Length: 252
Image (cartoon, rainbow, N blue to C red; front, side, top):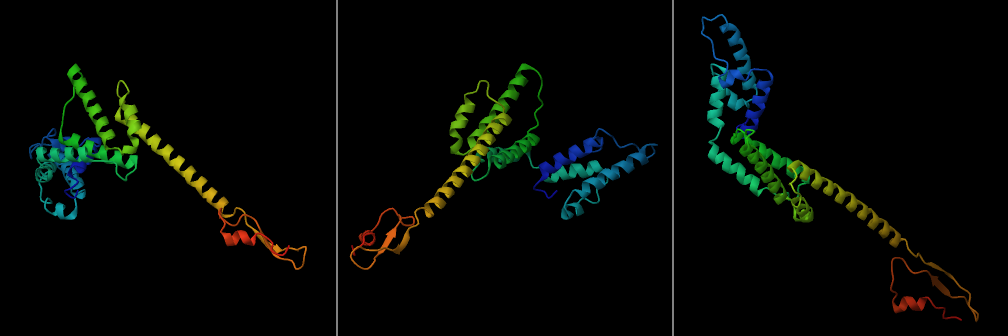
């Protein structure tokens, strides 16, 4: 963790500790026993192990300022307090980045991955508990439709026709379904453009070699043979007056 990537770091550590069933040490679910308790030594051993895991994920400069933390929970709380920005400014920053993100020169995949990362970071800042009640389900649908609109708005104008088709669906498709449709369209365009370039190259090669003329000696009826020139010329459609005159024999 370098400080700038706090949100993704916190998410990764939460998953890692949860997978090892050690999340309770940092969220307070597993309480430190008394020093005289029989379980204290075992708890201390596990807690120090977690503390070392967390320290090893920090950059060297940051780790040095936390090395004297007594417990893994103390270390976790201090890191979150120091690098976890207030939700208000962070929420504003992420929402602004989401609303202003556009595809630009990126591929559809690159654009979607950037947008997905911002959505995930925003979800970490705005913790909303969903329920299965009708209002909760309505909130889920609203969030899904909002993500779909945000994705379509950031796409380049060349996808306007496809965007209009997607918005005509009833009900609206998921953002993942829309992404799949746009990605297929991008790949189809790539194939079509490649075929067009190959066809143009083939036509240019054919045009360059088209109608190579011959120059030789001809025999005249009234005396010495004259020069004659046949063919259309290389890559030339129009002939100048001098070139036209050379096509005629002036000896017969």
